[in-house]
Image (tube, rainbow, N blue to C red; front, side, top):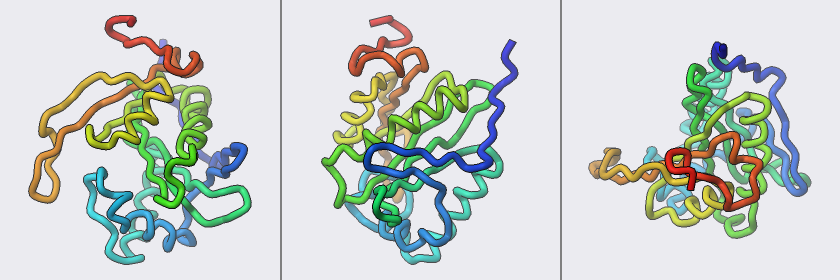
Length: 201
């Protein structure tokens, strides 16, 4: 009988792909994080306050580090192999130990949109989640208007499980949410061949 996840993020797992290095976020990355969290195009589908200063970015980094220490979440900084600048972030948060489930979130500098960067970064992160953390399922919540994010999820075998109407209140407005998920048994299937957990189709 399972007793829940047994997580250990020390030492921090550094992940590599052909073009990228995924590493821990430190206070030295505050300027890059500020750029990501203060850009209207990057934040347009993320219902969180935009960073107004580098101080806001530092507070965000502190939250990431606290989340890591409490094993509530783990976030990687995305950098090119030949450049230490952070061009994006990706990670798991809201880890539910008893359910072997976590939510994945990500953002990427607009200068690197359309280059397959996030798809490349997501593969080792999902591999780590399923095969090292031993997750059974990964959830992703998306704005239904965020077509690029939805295409990315579907490309990685996520399936749509729910469409929630005006379930999220932010900045004086209600927003819809589309919920996607990926089961461990569908992670290694050929792209586009995952099955819906309820229907098997």
